[in-house]
Image 1: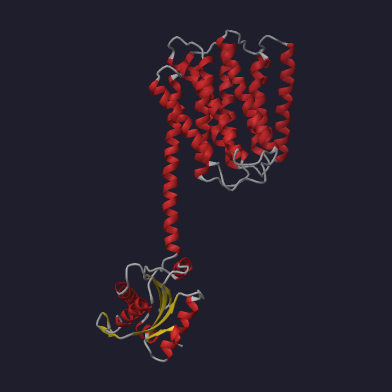
Image 2 (image 1 turned 90 degrees about the vertical axis):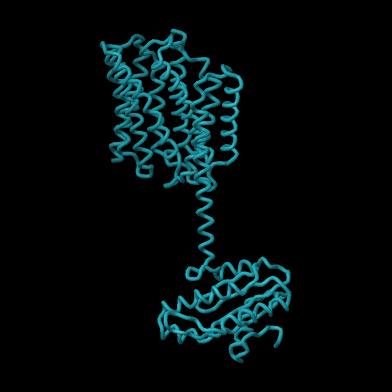
Length: 460
């Protein structure tokens, strides 16, 4: 495959050189030169992309081949119309094929320039916003003055506007993609190809406006040179070091601001800019809205994931990770940690089964929660062990501990069964030692060992 790629691409480059040299010699259109050889070069470039080196992104290469194929088909039909009589419908098809080059190229280029195997949706949208924003500005400043006067022909006016706007958006797309990574040989070659291709379009438009364009002139080879550079860039790897931060949000914000400003100027001063810049400006704002919607959903999902990561799946309480995080934030403020371990839970769990045990744990969590002040944090640490972080003085922490102990004074009703359980509670006040978990655990084991119910670490 690689050998086929090298042979076909080499053949295409060789034919392009021959065409350029022959064009200097023959200044008038020639069927063999401007119809067959010219379009054969573009078709060879399409087939050469079938065997590109394996380090390329296959989706990007497929869309690049599709883009060049659309352009080659449009060029072939357009060339045929010069040498042979073709009806206007065929000419319209040629323009449609030329137009389809742009969306395919717009998809291909970011993937072609990026070394990463996967590009996030937000990164793609950010690049699109920058491309459309810069395209809107370029359209307002450069496209209007060179547009031909087409005397009300809406179809030709549409295509005359679409091509330069598409070129500007493609150039802006390359710029926005390069903002996220270091410049590589591949990026330089591919960017040069797009710039030369876009320049050829603008040169054709300018020559056409000034009645100086001649079919078969050497300026027509600019499109082929641009496509040749795009194909050549696939022989090189993209930059090995890419940014992990994606597109700088400053560029995204600036693009949205530019589009909103242009839209405001069009509204306040009609006619100051060409009305057709409404399309890229509105598209910029639309994509920005979509990007904001996705970002909000991602933020919610991230928040939900963080909540789940710090929540006990059975009881819905905070878990050990969440409790430890809050203990680290308590600092030197007054408070206490309570460790609660159920008495007699293991025999019940073994006798009645895990389903009953899980139901008891849920009911225990509800009882503990009802006995706590609103600012306390209740967490299940694992198994039948719970933790409570209290903000308050010594008296408050002891009152809460006794209230929690009292919640276990009446049995749990599971179906027809009445189950009695107890709880041992260790209390440790927050002080300069800050080893709350260890001290509360020591106090809890003392309470269990000596059947105290509640034990404070400072008591021993």
